Length: 116
Image (cartoon, rainbow, N blue to C red):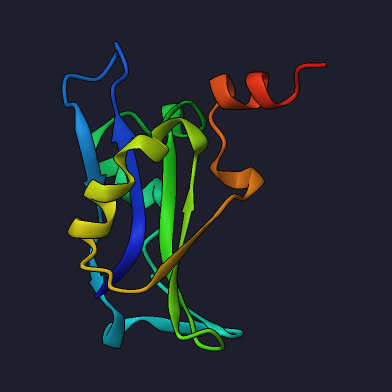
C-alpha cells in the first residue's frame, strides 16, 4: 500500500495527461495525529510535472492511512471520482474510504457545489 498526493491532469496548458502521483510506501510515512501522511505536498509533485501556479486549477487528491480505522482514506476532488479505480490500483489499496475536503476542490467543482 502507498500513500501520497495525486493529480489528474487534463488541462489545455499542460501537455501531459492522466493520473500523476507520488507513491510513498506506507511504512515510510510520517505520523501526524492519528494518520500516516506523505511529506511530499501537492506543490512538490506539481513542480515536477507542470506549472506550479496552476495548483488550484487542477483536480487533485491524496491518500493517507488512518491509524484508528486501519483503512486508507482517499481525499478526492469530485470531478475525478470516475478515476477512483485507477487510483485504488495505483496505490495498491485493499481497504479504503472516500472522503471530501475543501482543499481538494478545483474551481470547476467549487462553482458547481456552491450553486444556489
